[in-house]
Image: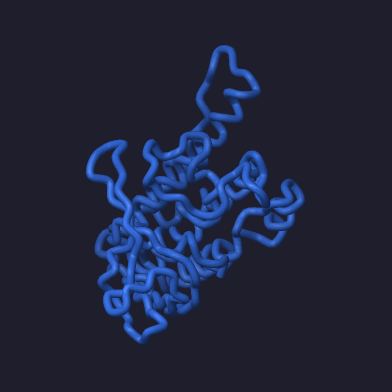
Length: 249
């Protein structure tokens, strides 16, 4: 969010949160809202309201809380924030600037994807380095994550606020981006609760699966360019299945 918060987060844990995109998109959203250049459409406000509910959620009141239950409650609140953000990002109903902001929030809170409650199936998505493996901490940096909440509360409250009657939505343009990525993309399905399916995406021409892919995105859809020269939009991937695997841009 702010440079001070980034410094604070880095000092709390040697594995700081990935907040580069969040700092950029949150600052951009504030400028656009203040200038009247972004008047959120109903879908944007609805998504913002859902995320706001998670941001403002109090911790449960327990009669005999222990350090362990408190830690679990704190992490569960951040995990629910991440999952709500991903749901609205992947639904594909928000505008490009709202999608860019939701994606940035998701990237920052990615350490809580599987903590404290991992997805209940072997094929469920896995992003980044799982906590507890080499190069990552045993637990997510909870205090660093919570330090982001106050600024996000203010921003999403503004996004979620109801526009005066007769206000016409105004959506600012968002710059497209392109990045190279070497590795596999997995397309996930959830045919029923607790049941996941997964399939590795392949080039429709040569069958290549590891790239290096040229990923191009305008926040409405994205394409994958294979080294063989074929560019495909028919990969079926959700935004999060690509965005959360890329470098922190």
